[in-house]
Length: 142
Image (cartoon, rainbow, N blue to C red; front, side):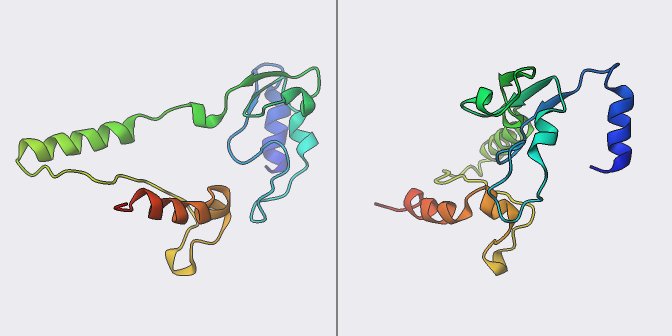
């Protein structure tokens, strides 16, 4: 964040309840991902009166004055993709074009380039090396 963002936060922090939220990796702790930006985690751990997190032992990481709840960004479900897939399948079946779906997987990463073996932040964060192994097992005829 830049200085303008921080100035706005300080301007409004007594009028608006700001909460921290874990959104990926181990945020607000330091990331083990070599492709991630580096930041001072203590700055964010102490910034908000409350934090939505995904840690097993939050008391080991957050100051006593920070209220925590086990809830991260991934807990907020977006149903649009699911309903889009369902509607497309129903359309095909109504038109007599329905085919049996054997496998249905989605894997997405913003900086992944198949030509370079999907190396980068998202690949590391989403464990793409495991995905390659798992797809072979999940799609096997055995």
